[in-house]
Image 1: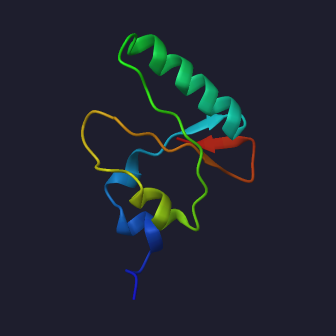
Image 2 (image 1 turned 135 degrees about the vertical axis):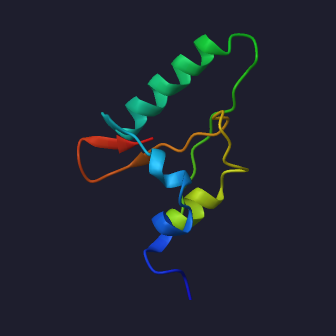
Length: 84
């Protein structure tokens, strides 16, 4: 049985730093890719789209959670905001 509180609680404290960005998921993902490409010039980044059955699966797709972000999830919402 999953812990009470669902995937947000399961992946705590990683989920405490979720940011909301105003814009569609595609627009936010494109802006993130452009900014990372600028910052990491010459290092190459991997960008791929995927569908997840639930939040637990989405958070579980990250190889690790560290102090320096090396993996970003861009999650759509039912509003004008996107979760990063």
